[in-house]
Length: 327
View (cartoon, rainbow, N blue to C red):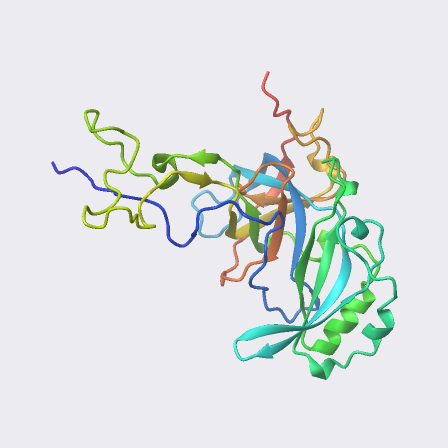
């Protein structure tokens, strides 16, 4: 029987394979929505647990039976608006035309330099007809959590709405106010999650690209690629050759995750606190399945941009609060 050949398993979709320079995930595509609301939210990964639920899908062979589903816990402290950003459409690109900083919060001053003059008068004089889209820069309040972080994360969020004027009025009505996760997402909603994977450090080509081990009697090394290139072009090594290097801490997106529950801290908190996280102090989002990244790492939650069908939400009966610490 012939041996299965698998020269490499590294996807060229993610290249180069280096650690991210950012600490906050970048949102490249904002969901388009006519509902007057923000199109995303930010939270911090706390860990995982499981819920007991009753299957409600009409087509499921276990309809009506109790199931156990693993869920990820994302603590979501309130957000605040830092600035408003106005964009103009230029063929296929969006060009940033103006940004107005509207907050003088002490928390925001830990992350960026704030202007001395108040710019709210400039914001009130804006002409909506001169722009094609409105987005906002928001900042988190990590001091309201127990993760020990002081510097807030600042990132851009989209604003849904039928027109630019209504979007500006919506932003104006939320200035200085705390934005809560239950006002942005509902239980059962499909979302996309952006985060950074766990950093693995410097790894070899077998773990990094999935190449095979060489024969035990092969020359020099066993855990290296068999060839670096042709003899005639000595000194030139193609970038396609699997090599050792940095692995992990890459931005990745999990598509079409379902929000099972927006729970209060009393519903999720474990006696003694979540391992390597502590006690939850804010409302949290319970998302089906796992999420890339380590605990206390920021997660970007956005409305799903690829889903076209609705998935029924099981009836949640109980959230497990058993101690996860091994004894």
